[in-house]
Length: 335
Length: 279
Image 1: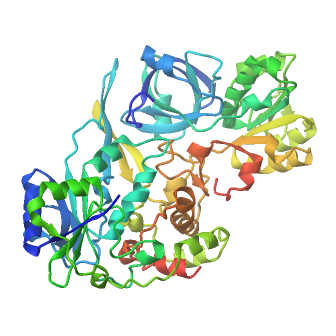
Image 2: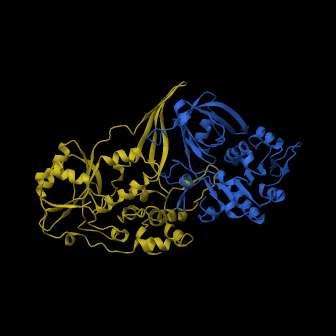
Image 3: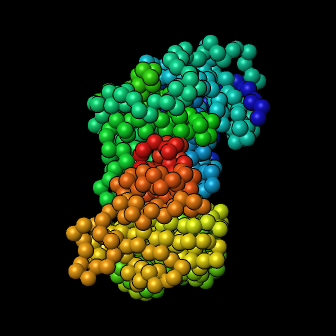
């Protein structure tokens, strides 16, 4: 789809935000919370911070909540009644301030939740999400989006991408039908495209490796000492998976309150020993090294082989949050 | 599944409960909804998620044959939280079922061939489905041999069916128990399944071998089959990785590029050799 370019003044950005709130949309945006910046439900433009490389958590919980009701039930000795949770009305959500890496993550995430078994809960939520991303003007040593076919100004996955120009105003790229509709609904705020180039306003992200080359290499690296070496410090806490915008492994658990309750989907992680443990006590992935290998192979080999898109967008969140300082970039570049 | 929400189970009533062995039960399940009963189809090898709402779901194969219409059966051992809740259910109770999921045994391609079924312990249920499927279409196949073993005589499941198969002139049944697991009146073999299979020595000529059992049994059975001359593409097994969703999303049955729930649970020996040993 053809991308439409506009200019939006710094002052108009706040008007756009207020219009979205005024239209009844829920806006999740980066907000300072102690030492961290998190995507949170914001009501006023002034609550939003611009001072972040990426947020600590990813934006995936908007479409794939940490704990989500699949259905509720009511049970008596004679009868079991089930109430579908996918027919609930989900709110229209604006993700404001996602980075291009966050937006790109919706592509593999959507692949996982579709295929032969479309997940109506995920799709219903996604259908109501507007992804308004902001290009990166800065990056840090954890960022490696350009190594996994991404970039600080990439449009993939966003509905509108804003890039701050030298004047303080923004280039607005309306990418999807949804993005174009938002522009049309707020036409007075968008002006003719600026003449200033986008590229000089983007962060210079180092390219450490090439995804295609890593993919080819990994084909023959199943048995390799690197997996144990690089994961020796791993505590198996699962933080890496929880902050990852692409990780989507989940558990299904029931929550009962007397004769009523619900079946829930909860985030899980391949880094947990229980993840693959059989009832018999046999565990196909017995060591933390085997689990670390699964994490890397799934993201950089299995997913791109299957759907052409890697399961990593190079946001670096997992490395920033790891209490044992295990760095995914360091593992991949050491291969 | 008729509901667009893929996590919603069918409601099924337990019509009959059979105590197969200590801690092992078979449920015969019927759909609560007639419409769902008519719509439902499955093939040999497929599995489902069986649940008690408020407790959780557990993964077992469908142990009855698709040739027997109107119900499905599952056989499970009481081990954890969900299987304990299932085990305490009574005839007439309603449980949840999602499925059928996964691929199937390519039984249509086995026409005109000999079949050798090799099973250990609680792994007879996934095979019982395909055994009855083959016996109900008996004219399609040549010799049918079943080698089945368990730890002890008490642990053998489907005792009535073993007797029935043993009495059929068109089935060769060999049962065995592990050394020490025999009773004074035990007339079957004593020994582990792989060594008993070696003794039975079925011909590999025009023969398909179907193997289900614990990982340790599989590990020692494959070399015996190889010795007997079975080619990898004529050997089939089912993998039993831990699962939650059953349709390739929750991530835990991922082995290499395959999901056991989507690409399996049935794998040929040839396919198995291409997978990393994470099962």
